[in-house]
Length: 294
Image (cartoon, rainbow, N blue to C red):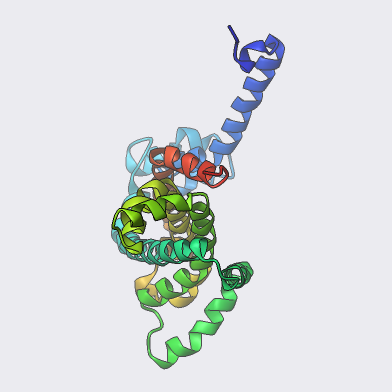
């Protein structure tokens, strides 16, 4: 009876590996945990120059609010500064970018993966060149027509540019996934009476679902975490969450704005943890599906 490789390792090696893993987890998680804890303090405690222990014990927080912790940072950010509006704008932008990118990416990726013409390779190569370009170059190219047509500052402008930046990546990734699916599935479906699109919809997409979810998550992260595009193309009223956090940090002379930023950072980061935890199996299966020939 064979034993697992981990069980064959000497005990000292296993202790060292576990210790290294524990240290790595602490180092990786510490910034977020420290920010999470600090978001329930006042600025004088969390950024205390007299004693860093004030961030743990919260003497000024107790003196100002009557408790060791406070939700003033969250209340000020979400209600006073209307961070909820930035969250709603982010949701609109992210949903639109993911839906548009996946729609064109799945159709284009499937067509390129099944094409026998040489232009498919050159189209992917051109897409790769555009993906390698700095996003700021696309922004500068879109600005003149946006100003001329009086579109600057509205959410559709950011959606258009983010889709343009993200589309080459989705096209490449989904093409690779489609190529790992045998063409026999398409042919069998069409022999049974399906059209090309029906075979794509009813046969290929269910098999491709892990790859679609993985690509959609990466598209989501690109739109969710973007700063350069949304900061340049959106007006103050239509800001998404990341530029809104930067606006808090840009006015540190105003009391409470730094803690608004800290609370907003926690609010932005927490959904990402939940998203990755919820879709971790789909992410792993989607990434491995692209590396294994079907």
